[in-house]
Image 1: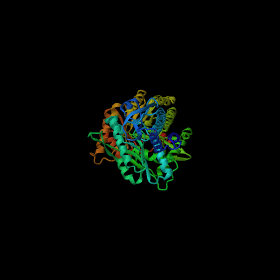
Image 2 (image 1 turned 90 degrees about the horizontal axis):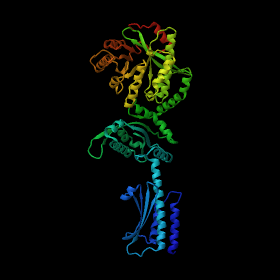
Image 3 (image 1 turned 30 degrees about the horizontal axis):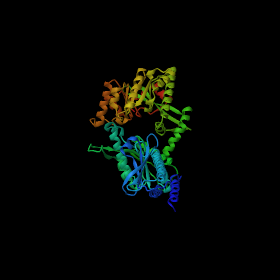
Image 4 (image 1 turned 90 degrees about the vertical axis):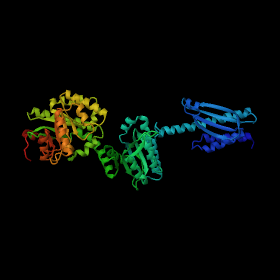
Length: 561
């Protein structure tokens, strides 16, 4: 076969390989190019790809050498192509020193091959960039699409019985970010993730969901190593000897059962979400393993969310009142409104639905519902000439994002013509600066409107003293875990702390309420320490409204019980 025929045969093959709709065979393309270079007397052929003009000027692009005979060169034909405003390609073909000059026909053919080569490189580079943009985030971490693709591939091809899956977030990483700055904290995160990837095992992957949240697939045989990293790993700061930080994670972990049949990625996430939420809240430790019970809890939560709007509409949720008692007079001076849900003739206990509602804004709907019904009851007591006391209503921290919260509370209270001093809003402690500012704004507004406010669960949060200093509360509710069980060992830490908390509250003008009072000895402790009000089973449990009204009419409790 003469060279012309061979040239056109190779050109046809090259075209076919470059435009193949199937997987492009790169080695086959380069094989054809090498033969064409020999026919066209090309000593060396190089293609470069640049992502920006600055990179091109520095010669820092990606370089592909299709052919190099090793001969000394003395001339080059260069074609440059701008692929778009941020990318450019350059194809350089070299002539061997001492060879006869290229003919006009050879030059034209070389030009054709150069343009084809630019097309080939740019096409594949664009595919690679698109692949990376689709499966990786801006910081270079694989994303949820990449994770799903990997899990699908392994699950469908060989099954996942040899794997575990985990959802994690890095503990206190916002503090590390504040302390070290973005650049160093990003290096710390990347090193921690690198260590996770290292112990994930064959087929394992760590992907970023966003921020400091990740999902991980890892081999069961490497479980101990992975858990140790979740528990904490010392990570060096920067490239020099600048110290180390301990990085750990909240993690929900599913050890995939041996008989597990994989059918979709979402099922794995459904199985792990409750474990992750438990780890995040710290209610069961920082690392929580998923089990069938957790799956049942998730299904239960879904049922609660589904029927809750109907429960509000049908007023299935009833308001119970737990009395607050003056320890000096043994009389009712207030009460806390609590929810009890009766559905299809059965009582749904608060712990079965309150934590579920707290996962979404549904808890806010419940709070407004309770406030409305409390105002109805107070208005009825006043209209009927019955005794009335101040009633406290719990409001979730989720309300803090509502800029109209104060207006909404006042609208409900005023619609029932309830004097403001009969209403008390209980709010729990907060742990972030943003929440703190919103809390201060809301409490200040309620105070100015004449509505009482109390800080709930004092003693178990993180910013208690600052909250007392900065926010104008009326009432301090001391959590039951803070209340001493007995007067024995009066100098023990819990008794000393309780004594000083009560005295501090009184000195700054707060009324002190102790929750969870269950024994006569605890009542004596309150009296001795000057805590004015008790709430707990020693006096009464939460009562249906009619029972509570009877207590109000009687309004006295025996000295001895």
